[in-house]
Amino acid sequence: MIETRKKALSQGEFIAMIAMMFATIAFSIDAMLPALPDIGATLSPDDVNQAQLIVTSFVMGMGLGTFFTGPLSDAFGRKPVIFAGCSLYCLGALASYFSQSLETILFSRLLMGLGAAAPRVVALAIVRDLYVGRDMARIMSLAMMVFTLVPAFAPLLGSGIIAISSWRGIFAAFAVFSLITVLWMGVRLEEPLKKENRRPFRLPQLIGALREMVSHPTVRLSILAQTFCMSMLFTVIIMVQPVYDVVFDRGESFPFWFMIVALMAGTASLLNASLVGRVGMRRMVTWALGAQILISTAMFALTGLSLSDPMSFYTFVFWQTSVFFMVGLTLGNLNAIAMEPMGHIAGMAASVMGAISTVAAAFIAAPIGLLFDGTVVPMVGGVLCTAALAFAVMVWMGRVEAMTAPA
Image (cartoon, rainbow, N blue to C red; front, side, top):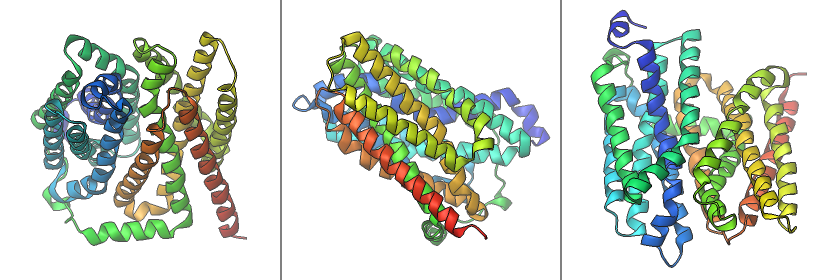
């Protein structure tokens, strides 16, 4: 890192700042979950289940924003794009705070997602600007370690905010969080991308990257598998609070159970790191999806049995943990599989891939979430179907690789 930046910003402070930028996404989604019943009762009393769309509208906005934030930061600099994104995020948060209808809050959350794409994407570019090689890997590892703790504690934090204010207080907290992040960055971080290193934003480049990615069979299939895996994650996230509350009557303890599940599932990255070198990325993903199909099939079968309440609840917690664990074994590997042939357009490819998979996954998960009928059947069935589709895609990918491998 450049010497003047070392004096202005210590490595520890830099890691904390980057982790906070990454955490914007997890905080904006997971802290929202405890507020969904109250928002549904206030803004959609005739169909409280529609409150789940508050999560998917944010995800859709984030996916759309991912298309543009990376290339825009290459053209105008990292800090201006983060400033613009955080401004849009805060505007959406304040509009959500004052919303009097579900339609208004859904549009406001879309704006929040568009704005949140900036710290999500640009923070990674900032790390690449200032660090290289093993230093970059170490910084990313430490930042991601902090980031993985946020989903575990976000629902608990959200519940605390609701307890001392109301569901509207969550949106005020979002705005405060974003303002702290952007002010911290504005004061302490120098612009990492010099003007002479900037590249003009050109829409044809985005279109060209999209064409190249969809024309490559392995990349195309990896994006499709990633879409199905993300749809499983989004399906569980948007339905898990109603399941705890309505099905198991454990709405008050939901944040604590979510924390336990997230912490246990967080060990998936350690398992992946120890096995992927020997097993390979494609096999690792295929095996994880196969295991998820077996577990979800068993869970689906058990929903028809009259298990005791504690037994059925703990079985569900195990299944929920397995889904989060599976996500930890698949998404990183699928990203790596797709990026490997795209090294010459890595930044553009990352934006395109992230946008397509995120938006498509939200479109799959949203209607599944609206099927909630007071049982776990729609959630488990949705995960089982998408896991089977993802598994089929990975098997197809293996055949494609076998046919294209040199003799």
